[in-house]
Length: 212
Picture 1 (cartoon, rainbow, N blue to C red):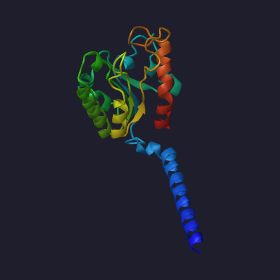
Picture 2 (cartoon, one colour):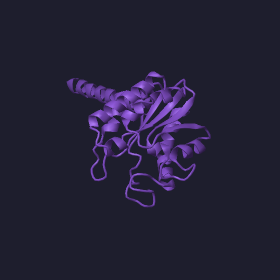
Picture 3 (tube, rainbow, N blue to C red):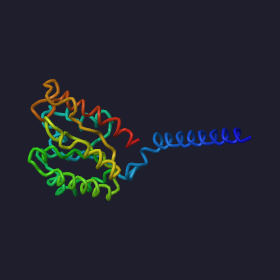
Picture 4 (cartoon, one colour):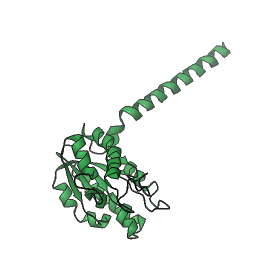
């Protein structure tokens, strides 16, 4: 009897672990979108907010990644990219974003902070404030990461940490695989048409998940 009781207890334990594992996987795969702040959003527009990578420096007309995404979606995307913007510059024009009544805002900033040697803590404090302010308007944020440096990535893991902290959708380093490849770059830091297409292809499935 004692042997049977021990066997029965082990059976119950394994069954309980199995049920909890299945439930955990269910939550991971079927409720992941609910972790994104303000999803679904009640806003009306899609906005791209950032620096020269959003503005499309290096692309020919209509081949920046924002225009490419707009064509692929069949829906207009407001482009609020300003070449040279740091995170501090972007903070000063957040009212332009809020005025669009956004439902999704793609935020791509940080590259100029690195080039201007802005302390990393300041960069990510500014990004935190930018995302938080957009969230307060009721919009969903998609954070797009960039590399902090050519030889060594000073921002390794920081964008992902911020995305998890604030509940944003996230696309890792949009320039991954493009740097140093003349087939994709128009200069040392800006993609060409082909490079912007790669960025659009990285962003598209994440954006699609947010707007459907």
